[in-house]
Image (cartoon, rainbow, N blue to C red):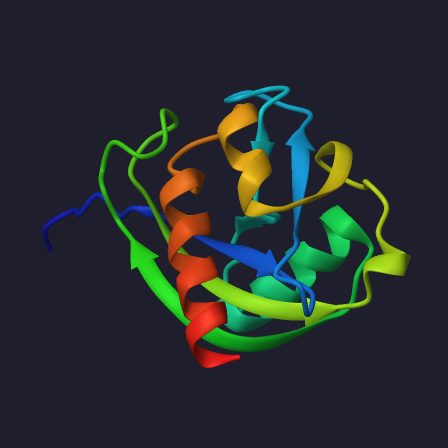
Length: 140
């Protein structure tokens, strides 16, 4: 039987409020240490991507989220310096008053579209965030 290289699978979560403000975490670890990123992480073996998104949101933000929709799949082999990583991005709602940095997050913040130009974003999260905002504004 042939041996295949398999990409890693992650889930990213765009948690937004009624004014389309959204939560980002400041990464505690490399790659992109001290850069802002969407909450998210690796899907564990035997776990659905949806459950991974909910778990990662809780682990990194302390927020219980409700997934509202699938945004897109991002699969550029060069999007993560650790290797070929495919992410599935979701939009979600949750109670911002519960937020606190946890797990792999050094800090946590609430951002608006206007602030995006002034911060360093990890990976390809600028594109993902723009896609999430477009979907959230169109569908909700």
